[in-house]
Image (cartoon, rainbow, N blue to C red; front, side, top):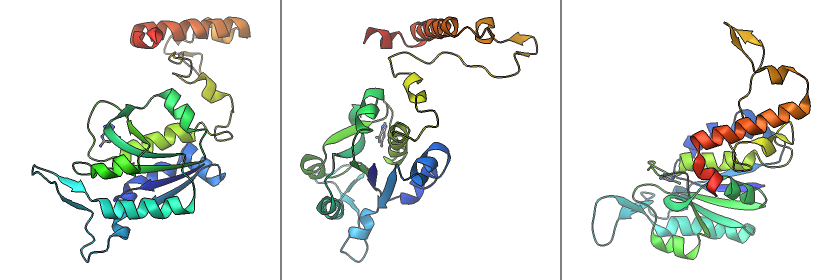
Length: 225
Ligand code: 6GU
């Protein structure tokens, strides 16, 4: 998969993809991430990427020309499956959306800043608006990092144990069950006996029950869906 990220703050997004699972995905060639700065597509001598909003009001708006020029250049090079705008007024990100996006070839992501982007960009280029939750971030970059991570780890070959994403929380609308590792007793705190039993069917049953219990207690809304 190839992901092109448009951001005026590429530095903010360097580290998230240089470690752990995302780093491995990139090194294995399963995920390609390219950054593009709308500032490099400006034509005025001050490299202006934002301006006052028509009609007045506080807050700057990202200008149409540099973003449009950048998007046009990329679109001329390849077909994009989705051009995503990260915005608090978008569709809230969930596991099914991450699953669907992980099946695509080429994604473009646009990170907004200031008060937002000129609406004409949204009307004419954006195919999907995504929010990562009901709170406001100062820019779309951290949201893009979250989205890329959620997608990237689903790409075949990225996780060591290919089946492990299947048992994640949310994959079947259930939270994941508790996990334990050695020692089997610490400070008198014991690991549930069944996990040490070697009886796989019983272990699977216990895990399912725990997942169900945890979901009922913490996220009953998931069971209603
Ligand atoms: Cl995608 N962007 C911003 N700026 N704030 C957010 C968000 C995105 N998702 C939740 N809050």
